[in-house]
Image (cartoon, rainbow, N blue to C red; front, side, top):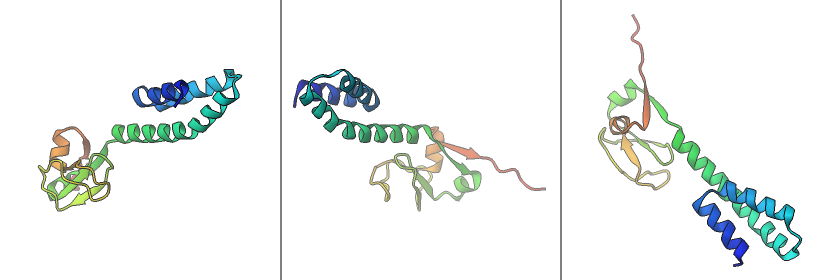
Length: 128
């Protein structure tokens, strides 16, 4: 690996892939060296993919699922905080169960997730 590749990869890992992508594109515009241009062109698709994954991960973290009071009262629903999948047959106070959808140990019972501030509850108004 060259110094350019090392620099861009380190930036992508420790700062953000988006910033590394901007730096790579700027270097492309300013470079006269054909070997450097070829090296950067080879890196750009990987940086673009890494950027997409980082953005998706950030969006998942910032999106809170909403459940109804009925869901919470059912007492058997869990939610994966990694991928958002709902799981049935989970105790209300469950913590760190393995998700069947993504494999992460991030399934929490709805009551536990609510206490942690990870989900929203939509309070249903009673009909008269």
